Every structure is written in C-alpha cells, then in structure tokens.
Length: 361
Image 1: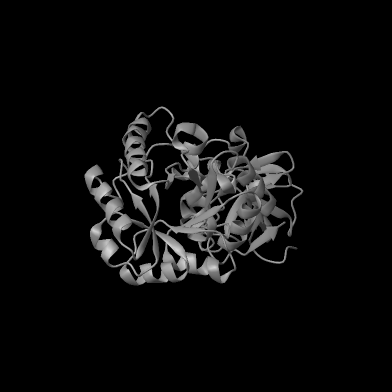
Image 2 (image 1 turned 90 degrees about the vertical axis):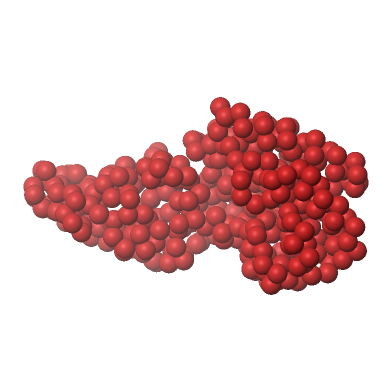
C-alpha cells in the first residue's frame, strides 16, 4: 500500500538533462512560473541551474521573492504586469522587470533593472508601436535611477510549424532590436519560447526562455522524445477497492457508465480535487499491472473508477499510473491534453497542492 492517496514524482535528473539539451547555444533562461508548471519552482530551478541555465523567469513578483527566499542566486526576470507595489517587491528581490510604457517607468523604484518589450503580435503585454517601444528604451537609458538590461518579445504561434505569423513577428522584432543595440550598446536580446528554441535558431538571439521543454513536455503537443526531451513528471495513485459488477450496475455520480457485461471495477482515490479533470469522465485510460484500462463513470472530487475486465489479477493496493510509464506502456501528458482539448502544461499546472510532489535526484 502506498504512503498516500496520490503522488506526483518529479525527476530532477530529467530537468537537468533537458536543460543541458536546451543550453547548447545561447544563454538559457529556465521559466519556473506557476510553481514550475506544477513541478515545483525552487526544486526545478536548482536542477535547471545544474543543467546549464543562467537565468530564471517567473510571472509575478511574489514568485521571484520566493525563489530568493529559497536561496536561488541566478538572475531572475519577472515577465508579468506589475503594480507599483509589486514592482517594489520584485526590485527588492533583486529581480529584473519588464516595461513597455512611460507610466510604468515612473512608478519603478530606484535601481530597477529593465527589459523593454515590443509586442510584435501576441497582442497582450508590450508596446505595440515600434516608435513607442524605442521611446521607452531611450527613457530607461537616460534615467539614472534605472538600468537598461534587455529587449524582448513573445511569439504567438511558434508552436504551429505550418503557420507563417512566427516569421512575421521575427521580421518585425529583429531590426528593432538591432537598431536599439546600435543606439544603446550591447543589450540582452531574447524572444524564443520553448517552441521557437526548437524550431528556428534565428529566434535565439542572446538568450532563449524555455518553460515547458525543461520539464520534458513537447511544445508541439506530440512526443517529447522527438526533440530529445525526457518527461520529468509522473502521476500515481493506487487501487483502493476491486468489486465485481454485473450488467446494468453503475459507477459514479449520474450513472454515466453502466456495465454491459460482467466485469471488475477498481476505485482509485484521485479526482478533480487533485487536478484530474472531470472532463476525463469516460474519456481516458490509466495503467494498472502494466496494461491500459479505461476510466469509467464520472470523475468525482476524490475518486475515479476503472474497468478492469471480467478476468483480472488486480488487487487492492496495486499501483496506478495516470501519467508516466508502467511496464512497456506509457501515458504522456500530451495524450491526456488531447483528450481534454487543451495543452500539456495545463495538465501539469492543474495538479493541486493536495497531490504531494516527491523529487527523485
């Protein structure tokens, strides 16, 4: 019997290996926002550093402060929007911030280190007008309170290889970055996310910002092995009960599954309270005894039920793998994401704090 009802195992060796693969070129910035995409921010940040990462990136000032509290000493970039108070927290944590407006610059505390963002087509944060972005760069360079560190953008469709918008964004960003460097000297230029890093060296510049890839998740939503990446996270539970079901008997709320023939059903103590989404009702498989078995019935907050078939050797206490490998079979986060019509990193980010993380060195 396992020690707990559900467990996420995180291989720090996989994170190190993935970072070593991704750092063969420009500087690697390991993105560890959202608690390391559900994997654990500080633990994965240390592994990323060991694998060659020279920077870390987060979305919020609190995330930066947490990394400093945990003893991380790499440069940190806070990429998200910040209030004046949040900017103060970021700067006090010795983290860099992103700017795109004169109003934001005026609210920054002294000694802020600034990266100016040009919105080349993501349509979210950043100056959409090249002249406006250039003016912000100039304002930072002329302000004795501030340090101009870098230039950046963010690609909207790098993970869609057949889409040409990626090239258009790159064509817009590159000459602007070159012009700003000609005016203001050597700056850290960065644009590539995981997909762009794997897709096109022209997007690399001085640093790449990799998130999903460092955790061994495929930014193209296929198979990470195709890019030499190793999934870091596996999700496990165990069989809490095995019962015989006769035709017509049902499992779960709403009786959304009923046995059509004699079979055995396992109850597994994991559910949407742990991040195993209710939309996986009658819509995924799990691994037990090295074989795939269908999840049947409604995913509840705390339990799922699994059809084992009429003849089974599965017993109470047997391990269940929801993401990961067992025997010769494996279930990738990408497979779960396809069933949910979402992306792999939403699957890992959704794992709740109720699921403990165990870190394998």
